[in-house]
Length: 284
Image 1: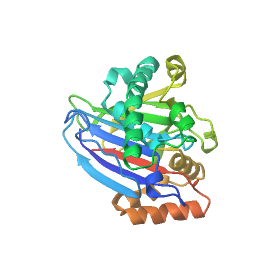
Image 2 (image 1 turned 90 degrees about the horizontal axis):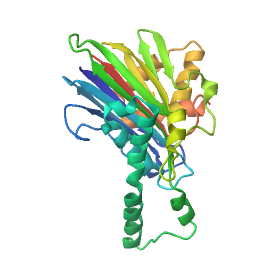
Image 3 (image 1 turned 120 degrees about the vertical axis):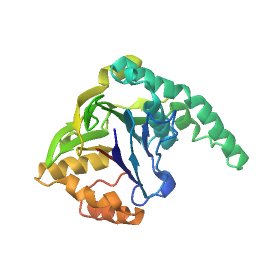
């Protein structure tokens, strides 16, 4: 399959770029591990590229909970783990729980390295930071997998699994075919299901994980978004607008253009002031 991919990322208004706590990953089966992955840096980011002649394409987004210490690091562990996981593990709740558990297995080493770097910089972990580090980090996560039909490369199948309120939207022509796992703008709340870096309940993850499958045709558009952008997308659609057309202009935008556009949406009360992450995939 071939695809055009765009990754957009922006931190909260009033925050510093390094305080961005989302993560995104896009990769293909053309190269092992994360050799073809995209992880946006902190700050306004607009990355795009063409993926061609691959059997499968994988994309993941995660939204780190702001209350967590090292939320972005945990979100990155999740999208890397989900991006490189065997496809079979993404098809069941227990398999997905195993993917998240494997990411959590790497958490102790990450926190040790973090503490060591703090000490080298003369800024050892403060006593009031210790409880937050001991509690671990939390994040929502969504991963989507795309595969071309063996004999008809201009069509294929896709599947997705999500924990929490990061969303996938499937658009064909001028119609929103699917919103997953949240399908209404009032369906977002302050307590979504979260993946935990410590003490994760495997059975609870399996119970709360949501799955979706479908087919794609060349020219379809898929959007993976964390909650602020996802709620905006659904709200626009509910008012009879076409958010995918509004987002088309951002497909060739520079980072400052993205920041200006998101700033206008926030200023008009159309978008909540939170980190923004959007992955657009158009199979070709």
